Length: 288
Image 1 (cartoon, rainbow, N blue to C red):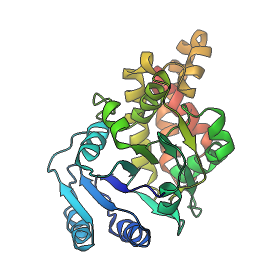
Image 2 (cartoon, rainbow, N blue to C red):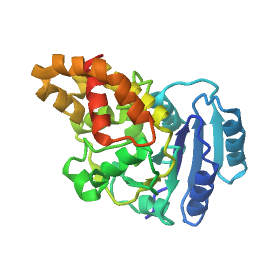
Image 3 (cartoon, rainbow, N blue to C red):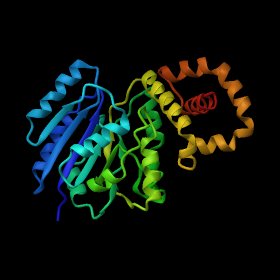
């Protein structure tokens, strides 16, 4: 028996009308109850807000304009409360549907708790740091890799969860800024023995932000990681590296102090290198 689905998309300054149109088309072809809800978490781009209003014209679809930014965790909890069907599919608004049977795969999923569909990296973007980073991490996105560490590999980008389970285990709303709310959620699920099934049902990374914007988001994520470092210990590769390199932390901070302007120029230029990105992340974190 197929599951009835509430498809939930939090957004901030992303136009997701095309994505919703495709999701609505897929859902309408299934013999299920469904809805698609987009929650605008205080977008500031008026053109994007206007474009997303077209979603309201699609059957069983609606946009909720909140008018303020509640944060990455709170907006997902809000969407779970607004949903009316027993199964929730969460999708990030900057993704692209890459399978014609995407919703069918979730509707037929045998899992009775949480299903993670994974991600796929889209077409090459020359000189783009986000593309380079995601492409290098692509082996970690396979089903086999994710199943080896099902809780540590959980991402909010694309997953399905039972509504009553989500309401019982909401996202931690202290996470207002970019990064790591999904990591703590995965840890929380493990602590409560909630199973996560990883399947091959990806959404595609195709919209890669400019290098300067991605580097700014990275810095924001590192500040989040530093704030919650004690709770995230054992669930972050960077924290593991920091622990191993603790004796060398003063030297790394000194190197970063003088190398940061050069690294920043390289990473925001048109030929970023992943090694420089790793050094920048490590130095930035240890300098917090």
